[in-house]
Length: 257
Image (tube, rainbow, N blue to C red; front, side):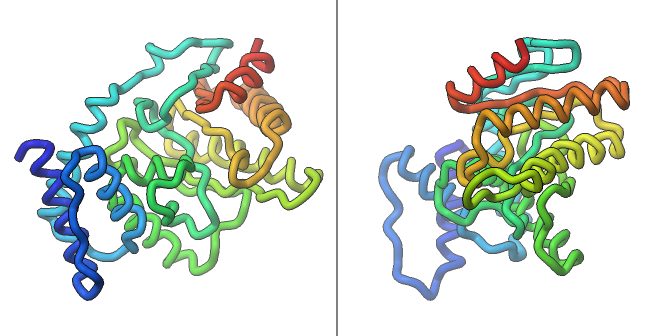
């Protein structure tokens, strides 16, 4: 199959799951087809899927990954021993684990093509990631509490694992509890990575954006928690602070010197 043939196959398969709904015309242009595929993947509930679909999906997503380009630690600027700062798409990083800022359902973002990192990671990983998260949550039997972390495979991402953590959601002024929970997110991910003998981890800006944690304060907590952990454990864990916005890049750049 060509990449365009894979794209149409995946769209038609996912549309067939909605057979009882109004028929849908597939757009003629490839960019709109890509957007439709991502939307269908985003809204798809965690339910069984055929091996044929997975084979085509994985081939499609891996070619998309190659087109974006993959970056290893060697290609990132080191700002301090064991610390890196990089601005860009976290789904391009070939590290041992990337951190996903999840919601407490831990199933990914169901809003079609939403701009959050949860949506980006699940879209690039494939439907297998939501299925694994669903199994974890069914076994747990309750929403994921803030400050904890879970680990899953990375599937079609270039990293090895994804660490899912739920940051605090702010509804007003930042409280001491909010700060402690955010620090717990970073600490939980570092400890979970160490428990799985991972050597490198890329953090996103947990709890900022949709969760309304002030960017400056969140970055201060992130850097301080990582520095304290590295000083305490001295286990060689290498940490990437991954940012997407220019504003966050400036904040972390000032904090890290």
